[in-house]
Length: 345
Ligand code: DAH
Image (tube, rainbow, N blue to C red; front, side, top):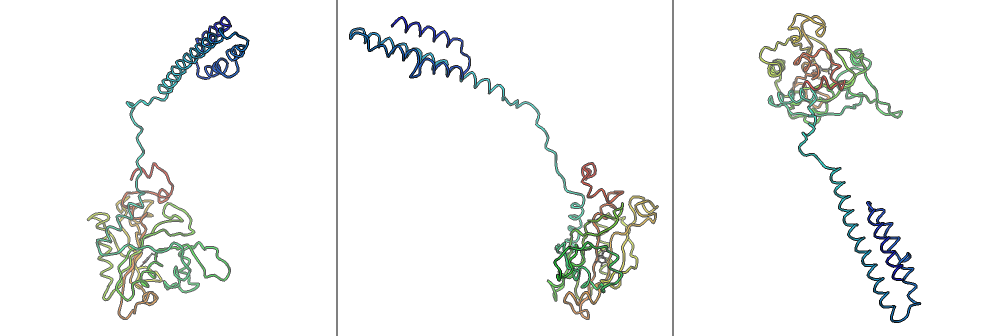
């Protein structure tokens, strides 16, 4: 029996020698050290031994078990340590490599221009306000003195919002002017001085000069004794601050239903310095905004008595303002999402 035992021990240790992975080590253990296996088999033969022989053999069996268990433990530790070392080596981070630079984001040129416009008018005492992008036909047109079916509505090709039958007509606002009504109804009969920036929508042919979605900044001042002179002074001050002291603007008589008198304001084309180019349609001037004295009907719709109050209003397109400032040749760049364009700002 002892011989058999030594045979098993020798074989087990020899096999152990060849083991290089934790998995095969586990298999080895279930062969030699489990409840069934060659050693357990030998132990079962103990019953046939004499009382003197039994303790001696028993001791040998325990000694072999211990020796195999000890060899197993030692190898297990060694293999686990080796495996961990391999993993560490494989996953090593080279902290001396240069980092990858995170691409820096930037503000969209329209956002930058809006902030500049807001800064200038804030300094002139205007509060920045916002009003909805979706309006009723009444706010977008009616309360602004557009008579029903008046051709002036054709100046602005409108996107209509599909509504359940019987609802009032709802539109994507074609301009920020309905914000004037919201502001007046909020403040009347107190004086009001606000600018209202936001997106507008028109079903228009997309060209170098017009997009279907664009921003506007509306301005409104209502109080006692406000005159056209105040409007001209405010807009000249705006142009000077926006474009510098050489900025040249001019006022042209025009027509809008919600102002009387109405003007259009042009800035000298910065792309060609007034010589004439594609951008300014060879006129040397670029229209930057519409303006005028608030129409008495509109003052009344806003809650002011036109006998006592007067006011001026203006509406400008910040993309167009930016085009002038940076000499951009096509308004379609703004919403193209083209990084080659955006990264220049
Ligand atoms: N709402 C006009 C447009 O979109 C622009 C405008 C003109 C606004 C004259 C005004 C104004 O406040 O007084 O074309």
